[in-house]
Structure formats: C-alpha cells, structure tokens
Image (tube, rainbow, N blue to C red; front, side, top):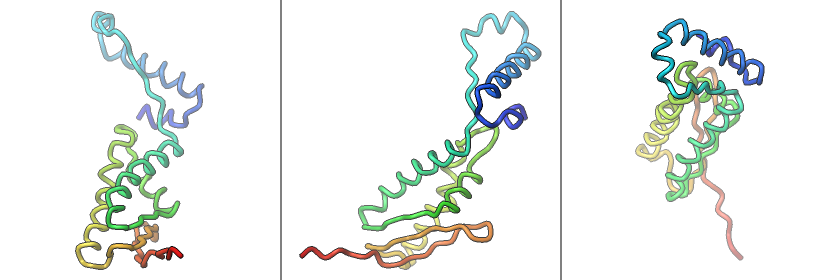
Length: 146
C-alpha cells in the first residue's frame, strides 16, 4: 500500500516514500538487525512513461522473433496502454508484463499463425476495443525493385 500512496515519481514524493519505508523498517525490525544491513535501497515507482517504454522493449523482442517470417507486428497506442495497465502490479512493478504480453499478444498471434490466418509477409495490427485486444491481418505491401 505504501507504493500506491507514493506513486508519481517526483523527487519530493520519492523522499517521502524513502522516509516512510525507513520508518516502517525501524518499526518492524530490531535495531540489532538493521545495524547489520549494509544498505537499504528504495526504488522510484514506475511512471506511465516507464511502463510504455518497457512494453515497447518487450514487444520488440516479439517482433524480432516473427521478423524471419516477414511478419510485421504493430500495436496501437491504445493496445500498448492496455498492456501496460494489465502488466503493472504495485508490488511487483512491471514483472507481470512479460506474462501479459505472452498471454494477450504472443499466444493469440501463434494461434493465428497455426490456423493459417497469418502467413509470411503479413502485417498484424493489434488494437484495443471494449477492454480486449483485437487482431487484424493484412498482406504486407512488398516493394518492387526496379
């Protein structure tokens, strides 16, 4: 609950968060234990911009894996925002994001490939509609060299 109260990323909120965490540690642990701890690191809470960048990094890994089949994967900003929302947990940060991308993008894409709906040289556009992701598939335009 402490993370939720201090989420936002400003320097002032970080200092308040750090003070709160240290006070909570002093309340929960004996001084003898705390004296044996070399350092206590308090991480900044993830901002929405951080989450968007993490989504993009994870998606790029997936894009690289389908690139050898000339499959291009595009996600709308709405789809990326929804993945960031589903993949963020106040306690675990962005750790669940990888599993969310696997469940919501990678697995449905694999099924579409296996069913033959996505072929080589396809463009797959993932969008968000009504609280779920939608996939539209179209042939990728192939440039003709003159």
